[in-house]
Image (spheres, helix red, strand yellow):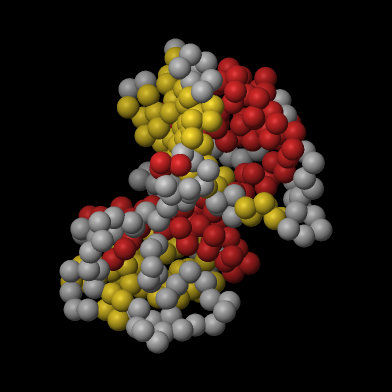
Length: 292
């Protein structure tokens, strides 16, 4: 079980997180539908399967009723028991699961649940978990219920928007070694206004550290970077230089698993160093962008 990242005063988000992370994971690994059956509203329930495809026209109404979803849920849970992982199954799910974007308007909520990175199988092989699910929830009395979802959506770069001249380009003959990560070896940057943001981390407005794993903290940190860039009229698409300060370089591959989904090509040039960080922070990121 993972600690709830939302502050004690944020009762609604704490409840939603507990429902769709701790309780959902434990129930699935235990094949125990009874643990989550009261978390749904059967009337009008609808589940859409995106099939990890960008083409919305190929998304399917796979679960037209809660009963149809329950049948599939139990089937997948049973199949998962046959898989042997290198780590505890609940811990594996917690490691790859990130739920931090929860929008609440009155008695309705939209939740963005994301999955980053692989689960390693014993004897080799892995289960990839790069997708996201949008949950639609409604508050009934003092409890939140799931009324529908769109699942298995591909993780899309947050910087994607209307194509435009961002003032940066990859030189024609640029190249890098085969083990290079999600970054460009060199970029040409045209003159424009520079926007530089200070190092951002997984810290909310109240100064609380959000997230325990490197995946959670990376996502929250990059979201904070996005917000800071937006104040200057920029997006991640305008970023040409990134500096990363990570507490433990052993977590570098897991950092990259999240990071690569936030940028379109050409990705920014990047430098990373292992560094001591304040409090329980696992990563800090600063960015340079060009504003045309």
